Length: 142
Image (cartoon, rainbow, N blue to C red; front, side, top):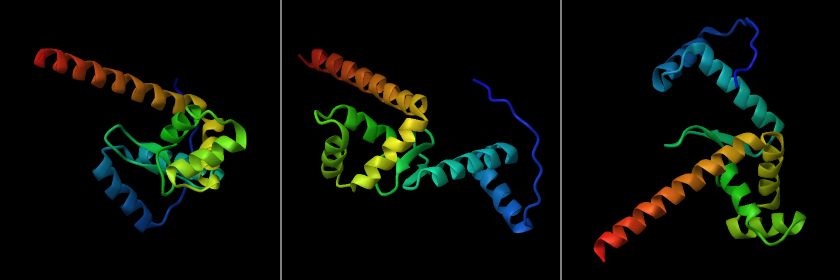
């Protein structure tokens, strides 16, 4: 869904604009799109300490600083038999994280559930497709 936009003008130091332009060459994004993304991610990280954004083959996504992606933590949390703080503690122990790191993922998810649910659904589809391909290969070997 397209978001409504408004014009914004800012004066930035020349070296910051040079760094922004250099990064656009690396990412292929326009200067405006890159600046928009960086501002959005910065605001999200400020609201949710312990969350950082990272690049990867599947795209840019939020992750727990020093831990897995937020979607991975939330998917694992859903699979736990415990609920509430017991689930947070159990997942933290299982992933070798602190409870605060798990809560950071939960806090992020509470604000952007559709985004994280989409990552979980994408991973589930890819896992199902990989398993189906493996089963076909095994049948071909039989």
